[in-house]
Length: 497
Ligand SMILES: N[C@@H](CCOP(=O)(O)O)C(=O)O
Image 1 (cartoon, rainbow, N blue to C red):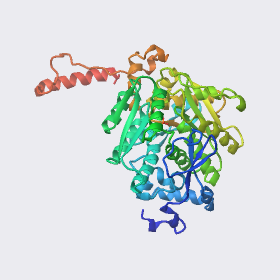
Image 2: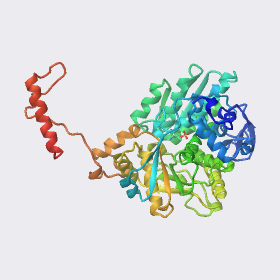
Image 3: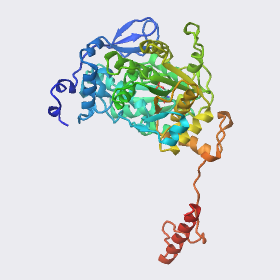
């Protein structure tokens, strides 16, 4: 729809102009730093940062319901920069001109209601939000669209040139970083560091296909992350992990979309996300808090973070009920099918610690929880989900397992509705499904394949196995009739037709 056709009171707000003043806020020493330089950690104390808007309170000059209308009407616009995460421009990157925004189709991912049998199994009504339907098939594209739009803005202003963007990854971040960087070539080149043999073949193929330099490193993600941190401290590179606070801004769009899809009614809603490097849960909390502060939503939803027993530092941290006695201790990870979240020392942990306190305070009660699930549960719930019409990755399985655990523990109740994060597309992790079906998951995962969840292709041959069509050697008409009749009969009998 053309802007002129929108209601008169909305027209002035439909197409945002760059506004506000962003700055880096240190979570350690509370220092504030201007946006002139790309910062990843506080130059004074080395702690992680968040990006704040000096003029955030100006957003309250419009009522919550006017903002709702602005976002709802923006859905009807045909302006690429406003189609994805920047539909929420004022909350994500208010200083960015629309011309600098990179839109590769990220965001606006569907929420798909679970069918009755799956809801019954989980014990509560829920939706999957399919972030695997992003361009590089994971939620990381939200953060990359934000980080790379900002870099693009700096390039367009001649403030940076010839950027080498680097990240460490368990497979999704690297795919997203390489994709968005490839779009901005020749100004940006990307290099990704992956733990050797710990990303799936599909994930490995993604940065290779986008033309990134791919480095495989012995060890796990946490080791790669340390190397990337060193690179960003000592060399002129742009760090694209979620340590970069622009990533967090973009990933806040996940919360805004959920709010919009429920017509901004967050009462009795529960948002379930896996925790790996913890950028996602930080963004989700921050996003909801911003909408709440401006009156776009009246209530903050419950948030459940989920971790595998094989990579559970955040869960362990919150096992201690008394806040002042909690001590964060990184863990050594064990193999996990939720490989994207196989992280023992999340870089966003300091953000999580502060935002959980703020979130609970804003909600007036404890509303953030962390649950722990087994590898068996992750795999079984993921397969169940996909057998019921979803495209959940193993992290999606982890989230659903976490929801079921939260119901069991009385954290989630019957009158609530959950939104479960399928962070990536199932196809990225189909290797784990193959291993499950062939009962060959290595022992250290601690997973036993359940016969009722196993599936396998069946080769159907005709009575005369010599008389089959082959490339360059077709059957005669009569032979083919016999072949097709034979095969159809065998399939019909298998299917009890
Ligand atoms: N699961 C991530 C790990 C890196 O996390 P990020 O928050 O720094 O992007 C991945 O897919 O690489």
